[in-house]
Image 1 (cartoon, rainbow, N blue to C red):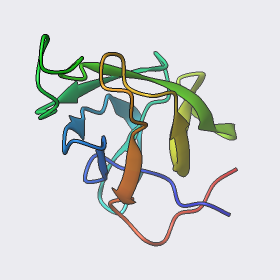
Image 2 (cartoon, rainbow, N blue to C red):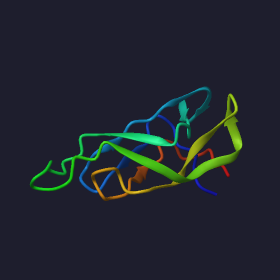
Image 3 (cartoon, one colour):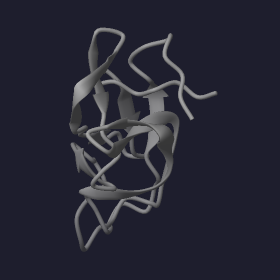
Length: 109
């Protein structure tokens, strides 16, 4: 089972931009708030993809397509898992990948 993400988790796009998480108000994992899976849009900060005319960047958002919990919820909303998959970041053309989940004990499905 994949690990539950908390606010210490790090996810980056292919150009080094970091995903900005929304904290779950009532669920903690590893001493920090878990990460909400809704809305399914992840803001991206610091993408180094050059703007037009050199390229299409920088990436500003990515859409979550899988990796949300089915059974664990906070106030009725799903949380995000380490198995998070996104569509390519808008204007960045690379998906966001989780480099560290922020904690190593709590698993989810």
